[in-house]
Amino acid sequence: MPEIMANTNHGKYPILIRTGALAQLGEVAGKTVRSRKAFVVTDSIVEGLYLEAAKKSLEGAGFEVASYTVASGESSKCEKNLFDIYGAMHDFGMTRTDLVIALGGGVVGDLTGFAAATYMRGCPLIQVPTTLLAQVDSSIGGKTGIDMPFGKNLVGAFYQPKAVVIDPGLLKSLSRTRMAEGMAEVIKYGCIRDAMLFEAIEKGQADMEWMLQCCVRIKTTVVQNDEFDTGERMLLNFGHTFGHAIEKVSGYTKFTHGEAVAIGMVKAAEMGEKCGVTPAGTKDRILGVLNKWHLPTTTDLPMEDLYQTMLSDKKKLNGKVYFVMLKEIGDAKACPLSEQELRDLL
Ligand SMILES: NC(=O)c1ccc[n+]([C@@H]2O[C@H](COP(=O)([O-])OP(=O)(O)OC[C@H]3O[C@@H](n4cnc5c(N)ncnc54)[C@H](O)[C@@H]3O)[C@@H](O)[C@H]2O)c1
Ligand SMILES: [Zn+2]
Image 1 (spheres, rainbow, N blue to C red):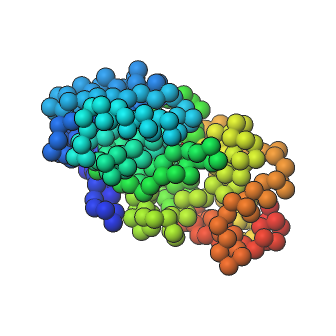
Image 2: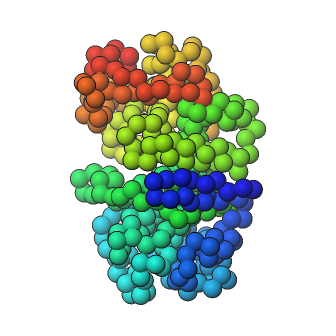
């Protein structure tokens, strides 16, 4: 299996996607840095599942390894953990040439990535994502950060890893709900960029390793063209404008991110069909694949609240809200809508 190379303004890095890739972490790390000191951050669930294997691989390649475990869950993406990680790095005698490894889902990836970006002004980082969402989304693209008491992801940095090691075998231990959550993002990639991927999911014929390759290729290409999120990267927000509003209005408790995005994609397809951008029947196809994964497709939250939240959240350019719609399955564009147009379409 060839590696995918991500090209960024800060150099190239390999993304290895292979079942069993965790066992090759040491080899990848050995090629990435000269130092033989590695600091692994993980969470309390992933620790019991995969930390031993990660350590064994690193030690096999001659690394001295220390690890730090945060509690599983979003609340770990906080300032307290960040500072405790800095402290543990210092105690381990880390210098800026030593390696930091994020072993976990998006929470560990974002937190550890930010620690690596800032400790001694930046240490080399390898992402080892262990959830489907992290494998197709958060580990690629260089966004790192923590949540603040006044909002999610409000402090962070763009910081590219030196390598990403994706092992689809690690997904076997994920719950069905977590798998479905990641599948919402996979379906999103199919919708915006890859009709073949979408059709394979539709037919139930998609192999996980192949799907990961498709998604990672799309994300790296889009990010490559728009590393600092000022243009094309917006297309990755398909289903997310409405999805984020759902998460916010329901207080981040009723739906997972992927579930909210699933509902958002249906809404975006419906709106696209209404205004003639999206061919009729597209919404039904999206509904079909979401149903296969038992993802929700509607919400009874008050539409007025969702509308107001979207307006206050969206960056408005020339008084217009940019809303991603499908020209067809596999092709998307950001459509400028006035406030009135948005209200009418909703
Ligand atoms: N940086 C980005 O570009 C980006 C993009 C999307 C999302 N995110 C962030 O990612 C986070 C969500 O990521 P997530 O959904 O991976 O959440 P997560 O990291 O909390 O993982 C979800 C749950 O799965 C558990 N887990 C992880 N791997 C497992 C495995 N292999 N088997 C069994 N259980 C496992 C975790 O302990 C946790 O309980 C959010 O904080 C979000 O803001 C970042
Ligand atoms: Zn998302």
